[in-house]
Image (tube, rainbow, N blue to C red):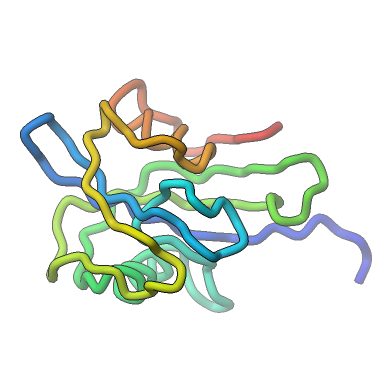
Length: 152
C-alpha cells in the first residue's frame, strides 16, 4: 500500500415527522460501539459496502437498524471530515432525510443502541455526535450546501 489517503464512505438517515413542537427527528443513543458511545446519533447509519451506492446503503441501514422499508430518501449533504490524520475520521458521509417509510421504527441492534427517541429539531438531546449535530441544525436553520466539511 502506498500510504495514500483512504476515505471511508458512510450513509446516514434522519427520519423526520411533524410533532406537537414542530419537526421531530428519530435519534438513537449509541451504546457499546467503541465510537461516540452514549451520544445521540442518526437512528440509521453505516458504511457504504463495496459496489453499493450511498443511496442504497442508506436504505439498507434503515432496514437493518430500525426495520423500516421503502424509505423515501432526500439527499441533504456530502460531508468530508477529518481529525487531522486520525484514521477513524478520514471519511465522506452522505446524509439523507426521509419523511415517509413503511413500518414502525424499532431497535434491531440492541447491543449497539440503548434507546430510540423522537426529538424536536429545536430541542435536541445532549450530547449529539458533533458532525451529525451540524447537519441536524441545518435541518431547522440555514441549510448546508451539497458539499460540506467538518474538522478541517
